[in-house]
Image (tube, rainbow, N blue to C red; front, side, top):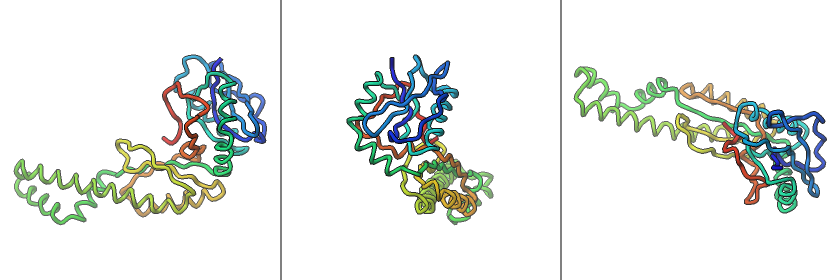
Length: 256
């Protein structure tokens, strides 16, 4: 029977609720596998597992319950090992790595921040900042829209100015939020976002990080910020080359 892996913790981690259930239909009971002083939170892996909302929430709930009692290195949704022995073998082989990450991430959570431009607001800023763009836009207006070439030129100038503003704003947001975080992990580029960054934050000082986010919102009204957290520190686990499982569901639940 394949083994589904939710996360890795210390063997001394407080016991989970006896009735905790995980993924699957019916939900599989969550149990603990130990090897030395590290442990894995696991259950039987249901056949044909896919990233359905019910199972995504079950995965997250196990990590939230366990994380409330102590540090857990979260696996992304869909981590399935061949069997229990495969899990304990990797726990043994990577024990020192897992101990180091558990020490480093103790008491910390992840906040993912995505930023995008509010189109009308950023266009207003661009027009205010670039006299050449204003002049060409006014000339086109007076010329009943201007020639085809002038309209193309204006569009290219505006697009270039907006692109430059995207890079400038992304760098500024990062510089304002990084001092309130213990570590930073840059996420993949995504259409529609000028910034996709996860921040590792001490749970006891999370209010300072969130206050910094609000300062950005107040000072940069042309930006829309989406903050997701607190989350298990998915982006900071650094599992190394020998993860205790391989993903078979093809989806992750780290930072959206």
